[in-house]
Length: 88
Image (tube, rainbow, N blue to C red; front, top):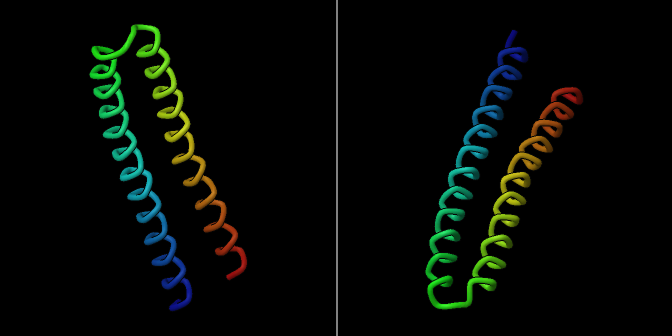
């Protein structure tokens, strides 16, 4: 009974930390994306339109990459947690 309770508590805590990590990561990426867009607008006023477009496309690609990276890390964390649960 005590071992089952310990495993349940460990699983709940790891799920909570995983969810919090994903939410914090996505919020950070959202804020970074907004700042990147704002910076692209500022630079577009100072640069040629083609250079500003190139900067915006590169920023959007990096933004999408980072969001995918957050989800990928979350999936890896879940797989690691499941592996640890099987070992225990």
